[in-house]
Length: 294
Length: 260
Image (cartoon, rainbow over all chains, first blue to last red):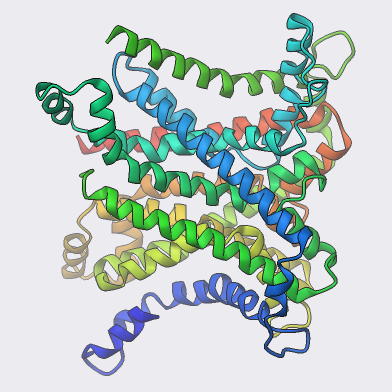
């Protein structure tokens, strides 16, 4: 909208800004199927069923059942985002850092492209067949090592099960986002550090670490938002036994389980705020990191 | 340095195990339908299921429609912005990134409220109307990926010179787009198209909440009611995703080869 105002202030030949006609279909589409639906929920979050302005819906978000849904979602997203970022960064560095056969990097990149898009319902099935009660790994551990992970308290239908499953698309996504950052590390920096007498640890602590940190944190935030909005995998994996916020919202849309339509809007608003903030922080960190990585 | 390399190997091997074992586990599980022997029985049952065929074809149709509408919307816009409205670029880019900020489930919630049968544009009142809404929803989901692809393609060619050359030879805007720009960014368009296909084919949230008989909700239903068929479907889904990404790789490699 700011861009529109800016364009209007510039002199336009002939009265009608013809250049703008070209982007009208796109703007119309964006308004109808992206901006208006979102705005509708945002406005609805501040209204009561009769349309009067109220903050009661936002206040109702702070009831224990809704807070706990948000909290579990945040925990799963933090755990899978951070773990995914760490493992993804290690794998990307291992593949690029040298010393390994040349075919490893393209293979890893192709596979990451596939796996980062392999989410949703089938991913849940894959992990049920692997770590479910009759899964391959579960049976393997039981038969070979006599270790019954289910007797030890593990269950795929829980927080940790969901986190391990989410890592299947989080790690590859991290590899894809973080590889350019690692490739931006210049050889001269390490050489300069070594000549000045820096140890490997000092190089990482004072040179490579600080350069990579904004990219790393930014990517971790993107991963966080990525799993925060996910639902299909969790729904297919746990049904409605794990109370995460997307599943709560899904149930609300299906059958008004909260008995208050506007409270549903408030839940949606809360989700937009959380993913919005993490995306904003990601963009800010990316701008910072681009100062070094050119 | 030697020690370093061992660390790299460990990272790669552990990572590979994490990614390969679930695939092996799923594949092995999918073969267990008949007691005591490995067989492709689960695959035979799935492929013979009329509901599978119907939902899969429905989703393939949706994916194709999404790609066509998405391209019709995005290619002219990206071309126009590149050529005439450079200053609008940050704004358009911001809009195309919004679907990554607003979760799919929130977006479809908004659709259900805005386009229900008693609203000003009652798209969900009829099955056809809901199909249209679902397709537009998928175009929205694919927007970040498709726009990025097309934009990268456009940046790699000299849009202005090509347009001016075509104009001086008497070509109109439609001719320029279809006969000059499109062939030049073919591989970028194909990449965006196959990525969109991979996203749409198994999508669950939109289809389920709009109550359409797509492949994603079918997968979920089978998962809730059968034991071995879901594993077979998973292997097939993975193969589809792999095929889409493989095609993208081949297409972009050709592009790189052509430029040399």
